Image (cartoon, rainbow, N blue to C red; front, side, top):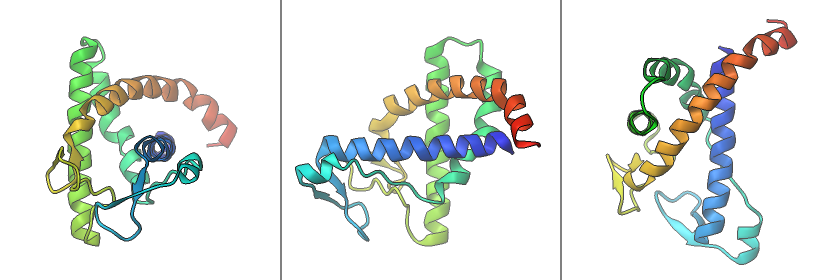
Length: 160
């Protein structure tokens, strides 16, 4: 449960940083209340570096403790290109499945990518994000090992 929380927090933080930097670099932001619509931003809006996430994302990111860690342990000794490819595919699978489930439950995908030419599976994934997910999967390996190493100290500090 502790690592579920750690992955949830890591994911939230990464998403907030990603969305703030993405909006700053592209000069656009997601239009409020619009599905897959973006509006241009002013220079001062870009410099505010406003990032965002969704409450729904916490359990999705937290699930890395249940799904990613066993996979990482199974392929730990494989060459990094193979590990990155498998982790990228796993992230796409989780993103697509959770997006489709959220669309069924809420009527929309919170991160709707359907405006992108690289969108797939009803706007639940962006194929052009493959290098990002490949790299992020390899970074998660480091996070996994770090979380395992610090877990005893965290448990002691929290009294659990």
